[in-house]
Structures are given as structure tokens and as C-alpha cells.
Amino acid sequence: MKEELIQKLRDEFSELPAEARINIGDGWYEVVRSMLRNLRKCNAVHTVNSIEAKMGRLRTDLSEISADADAAMFFAEQESKLVCDVCGGGAVPNPPYRATRCAEHAAGSEHKKSQL
Image 1 (cartoon, rainbow, N blue to C red):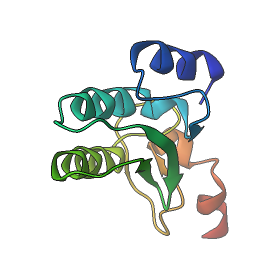
Image 2: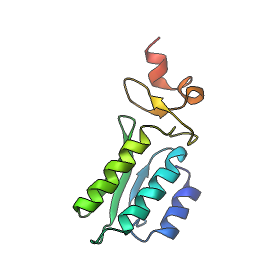
Image 3: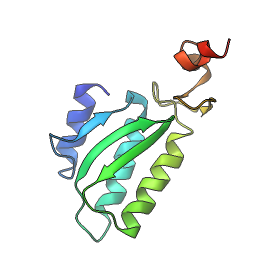
Image 4: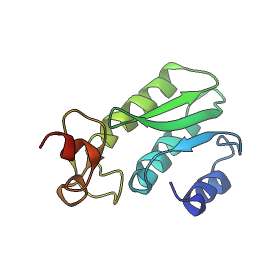
């Protein structure tokens, strides 16, 4: 994710400290922003350790896990499977699930080339 988008998230959410690792595409910005808003509504205090992509899905590591936080992370993970991690447009799962991309961005991705 571009540094300017990461900084926007850090400015809005104190739960996302400077040392948190963020390794995702720009297209998931709104998915992450929505997840962080939902985490803020949880009863417990949560600090984000990392936000990364794994097997084409959003993965989040928190300092503490509550049932509400787990639900917020699960919902964001499910949403990320339907959003292109490059542009934020609609996407479909692309086996073997190394990335979640729309048709336009899947055409040039590594996992698509390996299937040829």
C-alpha cells in the first residue's frame, strides 16, 4: 500500500501504530478502513500489529483478540476475497488464491501466468 494511504489510516486510527506492518495492495484501503472502524466499536482496546495479504485474503494480527474483534476481522477477510487488491473494484477468487484481482489486473499477475 502506498505510504500516503497508510498515513491516512494512521492519522484516523490510533490503534494503528507506526510500527505496525502493512503489506497489502492499495485496493484494500476501504476494506481495512471499514475493519478499523468496526474494531474501534469493540469493547476492548486493540492495537494492530500487522495487516497483510495471505493466500489472496486480508489477514490482521492484533495485540488482543475478543469475540467482537474476531468477527470484525473475519468480515474484512471475507470482503477482501471480493475486492481487487490493486484497484478496489469487484473481483472473483483466482485459484490458487495468491491474489484477489479483477479481470483487468488478474491478466498480468504471476498466478495467472503460472496457469498457462
